Length: 263
Length: 92
Image (cartoon, rainbow over all chains, first blue to last red; front, side, top):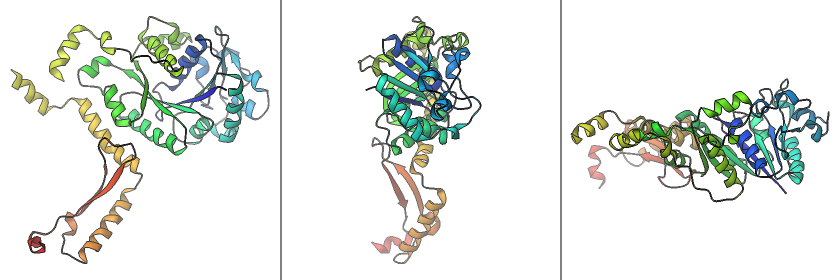
């Protein structure tokens, strides 16, 4: 029996889709059978991040409306045998599916797959409720900014109220140079405020943009910091104990020295 | 030399501390999900209840939601601050 993990955030643009794509890819690279579902109906993007936009025939709404069988809507990844994408419908809206339908679909999928990852839309309305309906676990993605952390807090509260069994935090786009200068909240600050378990951290990395340009998740780029960070998170999801990445190593010696005074 | 840095720090706190403080404050209210008009109604009732027994200044009474430092996410209290009047020494 597999596990259903929903990737949420509240605020848009903090890296939910990128995180879903990379963790799905990472788990499939580790030999797991994975389905990633784009639950952002009307604003689909997981397909382009994975580079599968040209292969879409059926979508999530077609499955729940039984226009097609689930297998027909599942797009096999270009490289990985065990990775499948269920794209969102682009010409419908969030009311096209219900939480019950999502529950039924994810329950069926986790019989055959090790992981079902759901890319949740931003916001706290219908789309969010659909996406979390069948989740065994939620990942909350945030960046170290006031607005993103505030929205993450609200989402954590809603996940608790919806009785999602486990919620873990991913802090994305950390600029360690700014953290050392005292101009950005650090990992400890965000974890202290949100008071949830930390699953992983991802440094700000321009390779993310390059990866999305190519439609090839950054986790394939083993030299990139973000790629390594996603690999670490993948390992932790698999239950391995991996230490947090040392972000200070990515900052120049001068910045590190100077930060001792300016803290 | 170190005094110079200290002074600068006090005058211009690093923005991450500002961010953290602002967040902690705003989240107390977000998490409480008690709207300000309800807090105001509670405040008025407290003034009424206490005024029956002792003399207080209604303008000095404040009611707020406070988090318990170090406790879990949902641990909060409603805190009412009701100062006694100056001549309240007689209350002792």
